[in-house]
Length: 133
Image 1 (cartoon, rainbow, N blue to C red):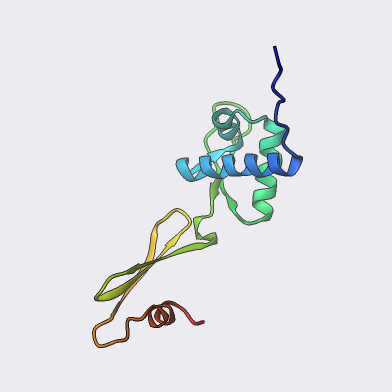
Image 2: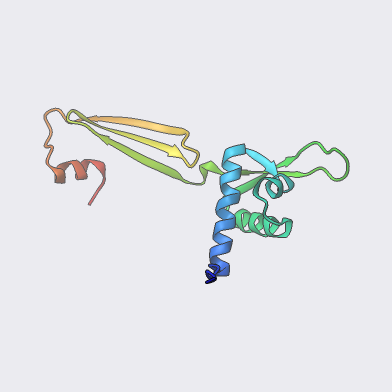
């Protein structure tokens, strides 16, 4: 029987994967404690602590205060900072360009519609309306 090699990730890949998992959980639940992240992710407590520390230093998450304790020290709650960045979207139709900007949780920040009536609609012109070249 031939043994298949077990793929081994480099530490940087593992850190990225762990950070991605933690950010995904925080986006899904809104805010939670490190202990909640350990339970939900099945990542070790020391690793979760290190990932959260890195995410805090990158300003991707932030503390939101303490939560009620069932005994012992109250857990610190953290949340994903959706306002840390934004996502643009453009819809191009025959009559108009529609723009939308969302935060990183896809919450709408703003919209704008530009009419294309009586305007050039070549690909170059459309690209020019969307953004400077």
